[in-house]
Image (cartoon, one colour):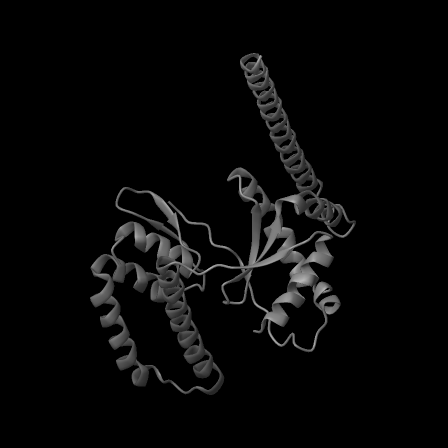
Length: 136
Length: 135
């Protein structure tokens, strides 16, 4: 089985830069456009809570996106891919489907939590009824 | 790189994506470290060969007969560690991939006639593991 390799991004001499300067790097933007969709999709398929997007240099430190922020990050990518300089609408469509998949997974989780809480509530009510009869 | 720089990168990525990000430390497994070491060795060998070629093209100085002994030692060590089959694959990757017309061949056919693509040292390592998982 081929193991997936996490992308490694090499940064050098960034001590002089601010985070705003780094955020303007086109190479970093290109990297995120490639790695974020793949990483989020993989994390979603494996039911993980964090999507690992790249390793910083060869440091064992990784940048990850928590599940609650997958949709906002993909939405940003859609705006990048639909920009006039890129205009990759096929990719935008793929990313929209990924957002839908993540949202429908969220709804499924909410439903199953609600039904579990409801069942527990009913069981609790039955127990109380039972003990009430005994006391009488 | 210090943690301060890591945080700078994290903040930059968060700003770009308009989404929170976190930094996590994950130790690489033994197998991953071995793979990384292999890739570093192969990449360094490629760089050494490229450097010699550039030196010859720029200056006319040919160090190949001087370097031959070192390359021979490396080849013997590779053979000793990896065995015949893997040694042949590695040799192909390092010395025979580039055709006389300068075109790179990345596809290999195995005995069964199945095609495998080897574009970089990572791909090479994956193939070697299939040939001999004990390396």
